[in-house]
Image (cartoon, rainbow, N blue to C red; front, side, top):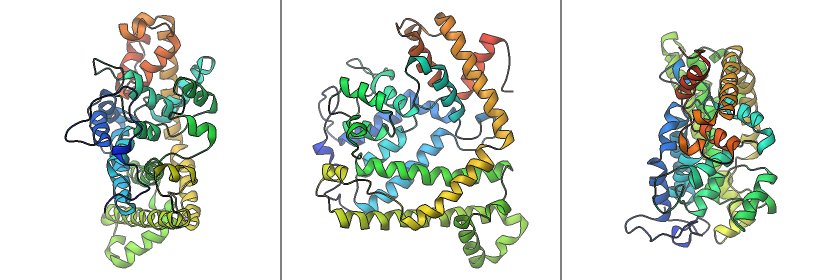
Length: 380
């Protein structure tokens, strides 16, 4: 399917922060994707927590596998809607680059530690990674991505931080948080693909871990509907030895239905608003969306996972330990910046340098550093 008029056109990109000669064989968004894949921050995602810590099992999702799943879902939907697949892929692969070790536990703790020094937002940190912290090119810091990819990376942003970014980059990626407009349709799609992906894979990981069961999930209408559909088509899935296949088939059917729903609901919204270019789409309000019915069905699943998985005592126990590791690391580096590499230790803003350094760590590196600095071993 050819790109629609409302899709972002790489030939009409708003450009990069530092001007560069165009690549001869790649579009601007393809170039962004390639830079992201080759970045250090992207490689670190393989050892960063999604829900379960890296040492808890080889088959649980990590930030890297999650990002790949978001990219796959995003490209599939983008193709049906005529959006720019390369831009969707670039945003999806970069959207979690700023996440701390230990998932949301690390992020929340780092935000608490930085409360008097500007706080910490993982979306803003992802932008810092691609704008400043990656050190690969001789002419500039960061990856020098296009405006459209950076716009999608900055998924959320507090008004205070948006004003700071706007002052440095007038009319740039933070403007929409001040004037209440939307990002590109490609960015909107990545936001939704992110939610679809983590609901599905957190079910899979949760059941695999033994923390939630298929019986518990039967109370969720969205899951139970497709579980029964799978069983009607394959009655032998009810056998105990085929329960794993039953789960996979249920998730597959649920994912497909959500994808089809997003496509249909978004096509309807586009027909109503009829944007004639990407900027008109930004002004039209959220257009990439679930139908009202699917949104209502998805909410209880999200609430179930929050209560029964993310707040499970076993997960919470690990969370409390992870929070202590991050807190200890922060205090140790602030007290002795020389414990960090020279390029962090030499910066004038010590607190932000410490936050940047910790945020870039993988789970296992953070655990090793914690043991080195405190003498206490956590991850066996």
